[in-house]
Length: 510
Image 1 (cartoon, helix red, strand yellow):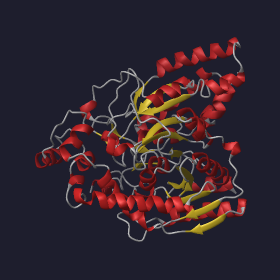
Image 2: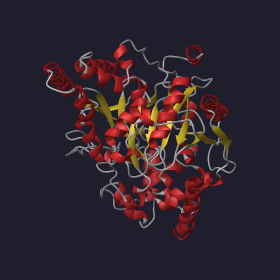
Image 3: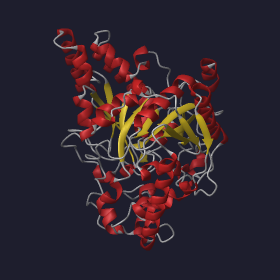
Image 4: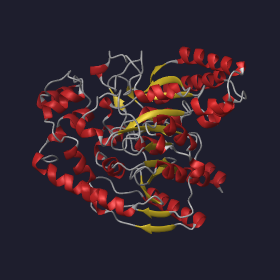
């Protein structure tokens, strides 16, 4: 009923981008700062001005760091003017020097509210930077703001009682996705150039798809998982990752090189060769729990596969990975392995709630008196219902996961990619999430098997909503997925400013 209401709500329009500094990649900005062509202060000011312009419309920012960011930018400019550095050393040691970045509010940033979108954490202040935040700062990045996420960063729509609802900049009546929705919306609206998010079942890639930007889930173990709320849990660690979101694909590699804990996995895009590329693709599932793939999304996957065939004489083949439709059931069982319902609730709430009285809490939700959103209540309690979860079936789902992993390992070698939808549909209306709960199977599979997967924008739909696809590769092959995203960006246009429509983009790509 609430979703239907948004059908008649008038869309708010994002103002056009007037400052050309907002149209440069982070990689380019950093290079031009190092060379003295641009001032970091001018860049930071441009993004501060843009946030002040767009945030009242999309509600993406939780807490800003504008004053300190401008002070740091002046220090960077003074340092550059001193000339006491080697450009080569600076590029290697400070690849993001003077460039602003934003951070999902589930990450700890020293001195800033660390809420994960929950009323339970409304007074929590970060005592230290999460390792990923610290790495971005060490690389010279200037922290600009924290951004919104769903309560406990656990659903595919960014809304909570503490910070409110974040809107999609392409259509404010639609969701920006979740859980890294604040990041995706702000970056898409040109209020940030790069951002840090987390991905447990598509939490980076789904918002990136909804908002026409790039986002990736790195190979398992490549980036740090520390410094987040909810805190790490053994049963979930294997399926959680942290990673970049950005408007320009080259920034995925730049950021991942900074965030990587293994220098063996550096993303050096010029070294990636596509001449022996094999492309496997899938557009539909026969027996999925969830929503069927929209025709424009399926067509985007086929267009990408055909491009690689035409441009690189790649071998392309449509496949049908039948076990895709088991990913939701696998997740519901393995995420809760070894932890009972009360311990799960206690862990997610960091000990603030020991037990959840479901009936009384549900009544509170209906009356608007609960500290939990309906979405997080479902995650905390209903998912343990016998309809979805049975402890005796854990071993069965562990076997299914092994079979799924074997299927992808047999399919993908170091020269192969797998193309599929990021989400089966374009962005849906606010509150419509409850009919899309199980549509994250396309992204969740790659969390389960630990493979890298990169979301790539492929233009706008007939309704001027972003369409995205995923590019997955074998373990450790992050660079190949990003290189392929870079190729598609050049051909299909990549990020499209929210104020542009489909017809404008078609003229540009012809």
